[in-house]
Image 1: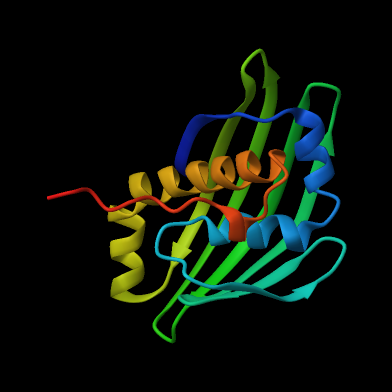
Image 2: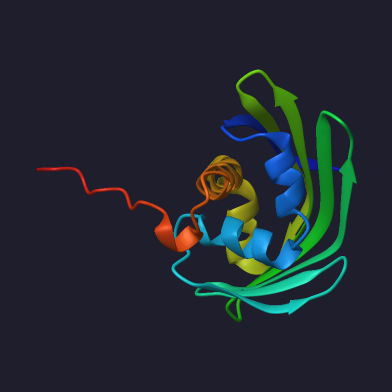
Length: 165
């Protein structure tokens, strides 16, 4: 296993909300993907008990072998992902999302490993995209879970204002 990215972040919601969100993997992952930078559309194409297929404005994402492990104070979700970004780049990776209950909500740890991406663009992604994509994985989970824990939907998510000049 070759670790490509490992990082942690904080999510202001409780573990019960996360557990409930995982009851519908399609809705959960579409919401998380919609919160990623650069994603303007995300729609669920297919869903099963351990997989989802999501079409975004940037390509098609297949998350398979989704395996949530739920404990009293911990949730760990593992899955494999194949992301076809247009016709030129296909990225494969393995994800582990670990959520640990703490006094301020949840501590989220993400580990992305075994990243393989085809072609010259894939090589650039593997070398240069690590920090930016890792931060996006953490922030998109946080944004989705915090919004839905307040009873809002991703469509209700407040938009950031452009800075004044």
